[in-house]
Image (cartoon, rainbow over all chains, first blue to last red; front, side, top):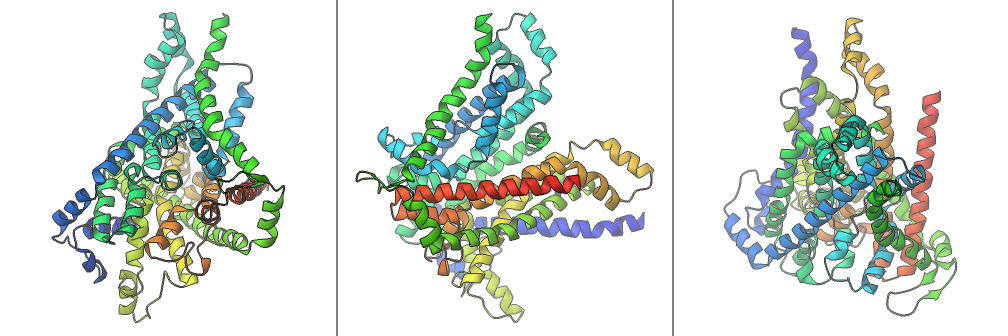
Length: 273
Length: 295
């Protein structure tokens, strides 16, 4: 029994060190937000300072609430839309037989290999032509058809929604859409939570797309606002860091609650592929 | 009956409409643009293959950006996979109680906004006052100008990319591990197999599909690297791509051409060249990993 524990020590050390490495920059971000910018360059800060309220005021003066609003608007709508579209499409591929199904599915899988940047210039030009440049809509529209989401939902529905409960729903007189709403959606909740977490995260942190599409200050999303405004005005690092910490916390809380779902949702999906 | 047949097509229609309008169309339009000279305002002029010829014969920065990207990928992907895999296996086998907590902590870097990561690492690696140099000084090592000289700058980008990525790999591997039937380990234990044997002869082979998925997506994502190098050197007031372009990735070069210099045609041609390179690398890796299996 003793040797068992001794053999485990390197494992515990490894996991602890790696966790600290993960945590330290994150911890620093929170701590740095409580100092005056000038103090950030005078050595490592381990304890919180007393400038939190002041930094918070600076953030509010710079209209950051609006940027949070912009980010929230884009991320919530694009996540909800993309998850719904993925689930509908995945349901069709997993539980129906139709002409051209295989070809269409492989087509979607093939598009997974295409880097998103490939069409970015064309997308910018398209949005300008449609008169959508300098609105928030392109940031939502661009993310609605997500091949990764379809792939995942198809795999998940295939493995976790038995054909029997669909048939029994049909016997009870449910239409196809009723079956989707009342039978399929409740069963695939873990996968929907996982996808929502990931889509929300990707949209919330997205930097390149708003960077090339948005140049009106009042439409900035958080990443764009903090990276652009900070370098234009006074380089108030600690206020910017506090703003980023505040921006990270909602995602953190979501992942904290969804952490168990994350793995469960992943299991039924891509992994079996 | 005819109505019934239409149902699956109705279900997939939103996806394909949205994909054609906002995915495929821009991609094809970019392909057309890649054969033109266009700054976004003046009329386009058709130039044939001129952009591609310039990329491959007269753009040293493009080659440099490919080389930089490859260096970053070659270092970070194996590191992320090894760390992520070890963490996942250890958490599953030795941390039944606090597994969720450690899982979340190690996923933090992946959650954090790249903008924040750029600022934090810029402060950590500051030449004069950064924490890293202060610690090195205590060990008697001379201060390194991390963000101002080429090789250290590249190393910092590698550290960031690895730090951000291993937690995501851990989550994917944890998901993969939970699909391995527990009976396999049970019977191995009855046969007297040690932990390391179970890991080598059960865990690794059973993780093969997820390993393939992780490697391929890591390569694709590796070539798409943009946020970290761009934001790190932006906050450190360095030129685009870092000192001496040491951390200029292909997508940073693409961004510079298309959205800083407004060469939309040339930028599109870079995007397509990158796409071809990614396709070649993914295909080669797939082939190699499948051949390994047959041997």
